[in-house]
Amino acid sequence: MIPKFLVSIYVLLFVGQCLSSEVTEEDGVLVLKQKNFDEVIGKTDHILVEFYAPWCGHCKALAPQYAKAAGKLAELNSHIKLAKIDATEETELAEKFNIRGYPTIKFFRKGQPIEYTGDRRADDIVNWLLKKTGQPAKVLSKIDELKTFIDENPVVVIGYFKDPESEGCKRFLDVASTVDDHPFGIVSEEELFTEFHVDEDKVILYKKFDDGKSVFTGSLEDPNELTKFVASESLPLIVEFNHETAQKIFGGDIKSHLLLFFSKKSRPF
Image (cartoon, rainbow, N blue to C red; front, side, top):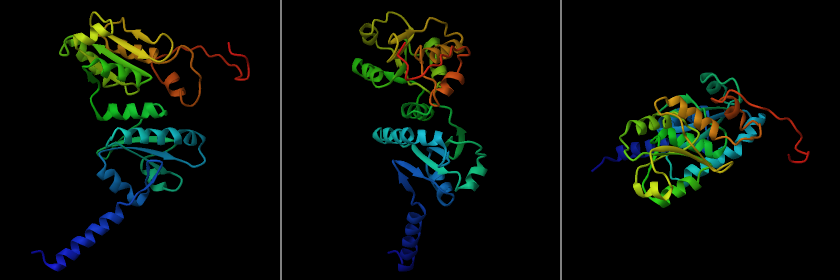
């Protein structure tokens, strides 16, 4: 039998823990402050944190996409959490993590921060996080599974390898582990090769624009070739330049661009 005074201590400790763990949530996004930051980060294996300023235009544009990403992760029953910090109020945290611009987004894996390097659309945020916390490529063994995988994503990269232990497949997975913007899949079943009209090992990028897909014709001996292929083929031939696409256009492996400036009020060309 547990002594009454010990029961009282346990209850007080339990209540104290509950109170200290209270975190406000807005649109599925945790609101972190100095008083709860260490506890939340310490108890959450994977959490993405946005440092923002209320007056920042880019932060305001990110807000609905960030909330949408939080919702998508919840639908997937993911353990990954999204959080935000008002850096103009929580100045100690902003200084601690050397925040110099807004929004700055950091990913904490078991308490250790790294810079978020993905795009700022909901799908891109989710894909980046899933890639950072899971396998570099999903194994697809059924026709419906592969069709759904392609249909549910704007861009996917599928490696068709009859032998999943082959050197080509291993190099494909190496590239998949470094590309965070798009989901990768692995297919080895003969039935899927036949259904998708693939007769030999190859990599195909499926997309919901332009021609619908692009076949990699380079060599997997050089991983950079596949990385550049994914970077170039995952963008439409003509893409609108805005704050969401700027990083993908100018921060990627494509170094040459043609820019056309015209008014949205003008007739389509």
